[in-house]
Structure formats: C-alpha cells, structure tokens
Image (cartoon, rainbow, N blue to C red; front, side, top):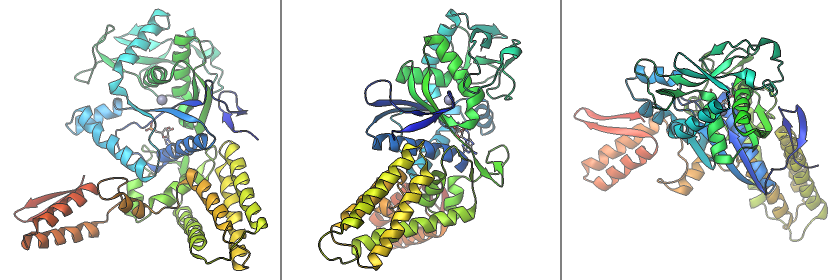
Amino acid sequence: MPLRFYNTLTQELEVFHPLHDNTVRMYTCGPTVYNFVHIGNFRTFTFQDILRRWLRYRGYQLDHVMNVTDVDDKIIVNAAKAKKSIEDYTAVFTKAFFDDAARLRLEPPEHVAPATKHIGVMVKAIEELASKGCTYTSEGSMYFRIATFPEYGKLSHNDFSGIRSGARVDVDEYDKADARDFVLWKAQKDNEPAWDTPFGSGRPGWHIECSAMAMSYLGETLDIHAGGVDLIFPHHENEIAQSESISGKPFARYWLHAEHLHIESQKMSKSLGNFYTLRDLLEMGYQPEPIRYLLASVPYRKKLNFTFEGLKAATKTIERLRDFELRLTTTKLPTGTNEAVSERSHQAIREFEAGMDDDLNTAEALAAIFEYVRAMNTALDENQFREENRWDAARVLEVLDSVFDILKPSEQTASQNGASGGRQVAISDSEVEAYIEERVQAKKSRNFARADEIRAVLQEKVVLLEDTKDGVRWKRK
Ligand code: AMP
Ligand code: ZN
C-alpha cells in the first residue's frame, strides 16, 4: 500500500504525492515565543518531525518552512511588563524553543521564518487583497471581508453561509461557531511596536503572517500544511481565505492536524496552567528520549493522555530496545545465516513500513518492532541466531531509529560531539556546584587554564558564572 495521509480538507485518507518533482513543499505553524512552550506544543512539533523523517524515508526531499510568531498581543504585553523591547523579549524564548527542540531531536526545518523579518511580504499580500476588493478599513485597522470568499468554512466543515453579518474581530482566535471578518493589519495603539506602511502604522494579524510567508517561500500551492487541531478554525480557515483570494489556486493540497496532548482529561494549555515544559521534566530527572518516544508513540490523530506512568513505561521500553541492541552486538554467534531469522527481520521492516504508510500509525509500526524483538530474543536464547543475522537485525533497528531516534542516549551524543558542538544535555544543580568547587580549587592552585575551561563548559551547559567578593554566584541562562 502506498503512503496515505488523512486530509482534514477532504476528510479522507488520500494517497500522497507531491505536486512537483520529488520535493515536498511543507509549511507548519510554529511557536508563539512569549514563554517557554509546553510538552503539549511539543507533541505537535514531534509529529511534524516524524512526518519529515517518514517523507524522507520514502525518498522525498523536503522544503519545509516554519514560522516563529514573534509579535502578537501577549508578546507586547509581556515585553512591556519586563521593560524589554519585543526583540529582546522574544530572543530568549526563541532560543529556548530551538534548544528544547534539539534536545527532543527535532530536525530543524529548511527555513525558519520569524514574522518580524517578513513584514514586507505581508504588506504586499494585504495590498493584493485590497486590490481585489476583499478588505475594508475600520478605525485604522484593515479587515478581511469573509463574504468575498464563498468557500469560507471548507476546511473546518462549518456552514457559515447564514451568519456572515459583517461582524469583525481584532483578536486572532475566536469561537468555533462564529465566523467573523478578521484583522489583517492592526492600527498602532499607544506606544505599541509598529511598522509604517501605505495603509498606516501598525502590525500584522497572525493569519496573514502564515499566508504571506508560506507563499513567498513555497509558491501558491503547498503540498502539506500542518499544525495542531486548534488551528483548523479560525487560523487555517483564514489562511485559506487569504491565500486563495490572492492566487485563485488551492493553497495547500493536504492539511494534517495533530490532536492534543491532554493531562487529567483536559487539554494541556498555558491558560489552564496545567502544563509541563520540557525543562520541567528534565529537571525532574527524565531523559529526552522517553519524552520524545511518548510524544511520538500515540498516532497523531488520537488524543494523547500524558501521565508519569506513561513516561516511566517509555523509559522501560527504550531500555528493552537498547538491551536488545547490546545483546546483538556483544553475543558471540556461530558463522552462517539462518534463513528463517533473516526473513523474520525483513518481515519486521515491511510491517513497520505498512504502519507508517498508513497515515503515520506509529503505534502499529512500533508494535511490529516489539513483536520482532520478542521473537529475536527467543531466537537468541535458543541459539538460532547466526553471525550474518546480526546485520539484518541491526538494519531493523536502524530503520526504527531513523524515524523514532531514541536508541542513542543523550549524554553519549553530547560527549561524542565534544563540549563545543552538538546537543546540550541538562545539568543538575549539584553538578554545577561540583564544577564551581573544582574551579575554585583550580584558581587557588593558579591553574587558570582549567578554571577557564570549566567556565566554558558551564556556559555551554547554559549556566552563567559571576565571580563576586563573596564567592561564586551562578544562574541558569
Ligand atoms: P502556539 O505557540 O500556541 O501557537 O502553539 C504551537 C503549536 O502547538 C500549535 O500547532 C498548536 O496547535 C499546538 N498545541 C497547543 N496546545 C497543544 C496541546 N495541548 N497538544 C498538542 N498540540 C498543542
Ligand atoms: Zn500559521
């Protein structure tokens, strides 16, 4: 069976092919950098990483754009409270997002597009909409008139035909049953950050940000557009209205949406206060790999209920896989090959592929691997394994890890890359204190080179040191 995805637009499972050549043009909605993102957000970003890796496994190249929303109401309010510019305020959380993403082994997209660096394309898109009669101005702000787009509602499958009253909203998210004219350009209020344009001083709405950047990087029709289910309405519905009004062509061919991560039967969200960040979990001593595993192991269209038992079970699962890998590489085996064992390895890969091709059914794909590992452990116990079978089995684990990326422990990866490169690992408070004590001793014995080295190591591990007359103070960056 070929690769298939469930398309929110058609509500059907469809065979996937890119429109042009072998490259998949994909746009995913990225984070709003007003705070640390939580593991619910990372469920959606992990799904996008699995999607990327599976497309590549299937021989496609990727041209993937992810935006970073670095100007919006919450950012402006928070930055003002912190007495910082929005640039300085968002820089910290943008960096934190990408550090966390790297710890979760999420591949960086080909293009990361911060909204504030792309105001020009947004202004151009708004001008095109204005020239087509899709906009109006009220109190200095510009709005998209949804009555000009009769297909409005086709993604969320809502029939809005009766309620197009000309009501409008300035906020970017609103009630599901309620279609409203949405803001394209917000007039500047008080001392808010603003950009000068032919239609006044202000800032872009969230929806135009994604439409304009997606089309400027990827062209009028994307292959895939993805995000969390909460983005279907109004955000993605509005993106379609804007983009298709400009181009007259379908905006995205496949719309993929990840279900939410829940905790105690509620959506994990900042506003409910029921969230954990990745940093919280690392501080509690959990490793990035089981967190990644947990986020990826439930198929993306199913709700994922986060529990600590689940996280512990994920840790055990990874241990079992690593034990098998170790057993494979260390057991002494008689020469030759056992055809039945070899065929069982090929079968495992076929089943894994069938699961992933079926709309990224990660649960099915993983189940195929677990059954295989169980069977192979038995084969090893019963001395049925031969030297040549090692390579078939290693290939199975390689296929698994090309998508799930959980077999290599984080610390090992970091030390392999050396202190100055690769991923950072979490460092505990006691480790920091131990380093500081060593540095004090090094300075006492006038070993300044070692003292500097320790400062560099700690800086690499996101700790800032300050030598004061009362001793050494440190804090996390
Ligand atoms: P935001 O930074 O709020 O724009 O969200 C970034 C991404 O995380 C979006 O694709 C959201 O749909 C997604 N998201 C937000 N909350 C959750 C959740 N509890 N579970 C899964 N995805 C979420
Ligand atoms: Zn978006």
